[in-house]
Length: 461
Image (cartoon, rainbow, N blue to C red):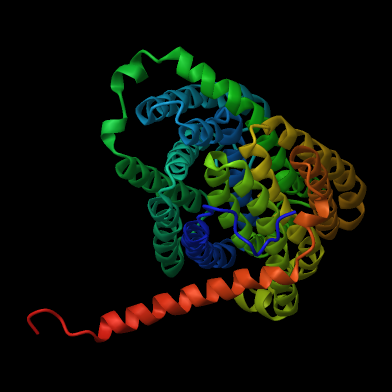
């Protein structure tokens, strides 16, 4: 077996890790902006209002996952393989968004008479989902196109602009003492629209063919749907894995419990920063890579992502009792224990994120669906066993168990798909230290070049 420190011939290590750094920087900026905005929302609305806002965003995310038909992942696959023109994919995405708008309107119109307009929380009508779902879907599909093209800097810009706009508007509301759940929801929708517009501008309006929107190319839609639905089933189940707990907490604990729990969840999800960056860059990279490169890169990326996540989780566990009350206020003290209970599963899931990208790149999206289904069964059983008795802490423990089950299933699937030992993707090796040394040298080299450039005399000076 090839040693992790020895690159296969032609391995574009610098390019890959450079792209990971770009995406990590993007997600760090996105996470920081979203965190500051979340602190303001939590303080302005209190646990109850924070719970209402969280449930609305979660419901919109579930809607866009179901109605997106997996087009984002299908676009990455077919564009990466060069089997569909960019213009056809972008135009098909617009057709999907229009269809999602119509289905959202029908679904909300059918549900509201039975549930009431305020089913997600007082003051935030469910009718807003008719616009929120397609907006979120549109932004997600366009970012997937940029990802498929490996245009990670532009993808990063469209990712960061949403929380940046949201933070500016939320800060204005907070300063004026005028924040309400409905207004915060409106800000979230407006900032999502800005992000979608920027993504479309970076892809280029020339890539939108109005004729294909008016008269869709059904063969293209069938290709994207057939492949996309296989993977999107897993994504939908995974989103339920991530967020079903909040609906269960809503039912057994109340809306304020959702707000307290959501704060703990949002803190632990910072651990996913590296895993998300690696998975995003890895997916198109492995889809287009040769077999030797794939065999080398997948286990190295997985085990080192888990290692870094474990170190970060330890630091967060130590800091949380001081940081959470300081940032969010004493009303969220109960979030700390939930955070602690979530951390083991959060670390495990970082490994899953990388492994499932590898499995998808091998054209096996249904395997990922099976992995997520296993985890969802654990989620449902554990939530109903623990939440009624232990409330928010029971939800955290249940989710952590489900995430660990997901990683275990992903390791098993990785072994079956790759033919390599699962331990290769789990246990760090001494030779992996070279990755960190190379990364540090790269950073120092770039800093050195910038200092030289800053000190060099300008032409004509």
